[in-house]
Image (cartoon, rainbow, N blue to C red; front, top):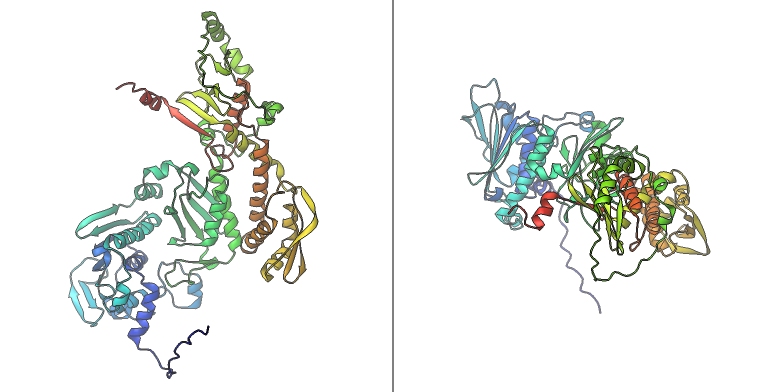
Length: 614
């Protein structure tokens, strides 16, 4: 069947486009929706040195947007020039463009907005006797009343391009986007006060505050309580912000904020670095929450790669990737139990091997659980008396309380906790060979023993790995596959890195790669898919971070096989040894798959279960 040929229009002569059409084309790149206008106008207000910015909206910004500031203002002679295309006070040469530090610099925002709306600007400088107002469409300049600063009024957005207006969402949706645009500015500039009004009602307001207080004001106290602050510096690069705890991860990536020199950006390189830092502490497809401020020398980043300035390009992207990843890894390293104990988990020794009997690594099945209940044998008065008398000696000798046996369960006599108690408490029982119960000053601690032990073993293996090589297994028959030129180049360039992962990958031709060995522990893996994934990452990101991530995936498999299995009955000494090593292990709050390893039930929650105090 023959397909119909498209109609080819008759050729036209080349000609210059009218200025208004040029501006409307530019507006299509700069002005996507009312939030785009809000972002550009707030950028200009901050560049003018404003300390207070007021945003007023009508119909979600479609019918009206007014942005007022108390900045330096625009001299009356420059008001007509401010509306011309590519007119700006921010840059004057290529050198200034390559090291621009202002929010705006392209000089096209006001002209583009004016081409698709009815716009007017009123401004007053400190030395002017009164303000002046200019109508963008007519160019008429009149006297106006306002204090120092600038007001930009935008009405009937897209009235001149009705087709664009049809693509806008409901007023509520457009309002939400406008508010989010201001929130991003507010987080980056805590020294500036912001207020948003809609239809005459106050929507949000943030007064000037410290950086930490502004984050709490904008994102909520829950975010600050469920995140850790961090600071990291490397040469001309400085990173600050907050990394959300893994257990506070969200189903959507709606609380991820990154700024470069105060400019909000969306960058795949940075997103990948952060995600890789969370890879073995997040469960499933959960999304981390974070706030990241990147300060870097302006000449090392190109901000002129996107009309809306939402994307940037770094001169040394791999160094940025490595630094961001390291900053987040360090921030997530300490567990909550280690923080409570004041332990520096990054420096604390991993004592699990020394305190845990070697037989713990061997799975020993126990009899199947039966629902029949055996009443516990109560401790005699003499047992209690002896346990109290010997308490000091027993606590120093071994991290276990005197125990009595009740059928197939193990329980501990109640002995008061010492003044310097452990964050995860002392073990008191084990449930069905799966969970360890412990008591601390707050109440009850429940530990998933396999998940907890898996994390401890995994972190110990990572510490021991260092620069050694993963054991590889030669293949009797090499696995070959068709590859792109980029994949072949990456295989040749990173042959040593692949070798340290246990992979021997070499080209058979300019379009074919052969895998001749694989990691011994990954016998069931898809070698072609694994190799392609590694080559793609090495070509785009820092090879050392890719190597580390791949090594950790292999070690995670080893840790899972080496960890104590469910239905393994532990003694109280073994349970307490596990608790102590959790307190001294990095990232002990989650297993390698991102599941939680322990949970705390305080006395208030326990009382609520039994309606005590009601």
